[in-house]
Image 1 (tube, rainbow, N blue to C red):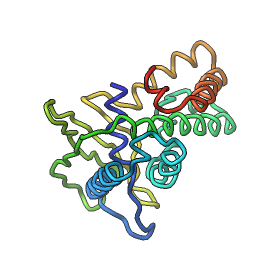
Image 2: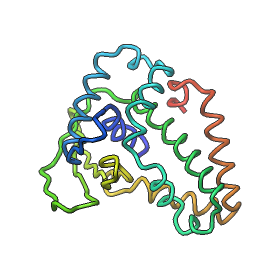
Image 3: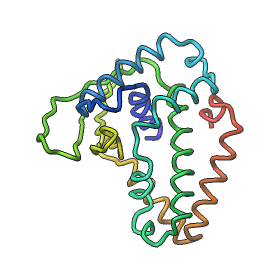
Length: 210
C-alpha cells in the first residue's frame, strides 16, 4: 500500500501555475500527471535517485499544492483540539517533513505508470470535490485513486488521497491516535521528529530498500 501511495503522489508532483488563475481540479491533476511523466522520463538524475535534485523539485512543485495543515489536523483527529498552538505547529512541520520524504521516494519507484482522469463534473459553487483517477500499469489491474481537494484562496489543494478505498489520512490517524494515547501529543511529535531525522541521513535508494 505504501508503494501505491508513493506512485499516486508522484503524479501530483510537478505542476506550476499563476496564483491568479484557478485551474479546475481535474485539469490540475491531468496537467500534473503529464508534466511528471515528461520530467521523470527526461531527467536521468532523478531516475538515478539524485536526492538533492529531487528534494529541490519537490520543494518547488509539490508543497504549494497540498494543504499540510488540514492534512495534519485530519490525521491527528480529535486530539488536535487539545493541542497547544506550539504543538500544532510542530505537528504540521513534522508531518510535512514526513510526507516530503515519501514524495521524494516516489520518484525512485516511478517507472511506466500512467494516470487516467475519470469524467468529472462539479457545481459552480463547489468548495470540495473528489477527482477520481486510475493508475495504469502494463500487465496489471488499474489502481483506483481518489484525490480529495478543497478550493482555497490559492487555488485547489489536495488534503487526502484514497487508494483502492484506503485513505492516507485515515491510515495515519489510526497510527497517530495509538501513539497519542500511549505517549501524548509531545510523544507523537518526538516520534515523527526522530523518524524524520533518521530518514534524512539515509540515501533514498537505501531507505527504499528497507
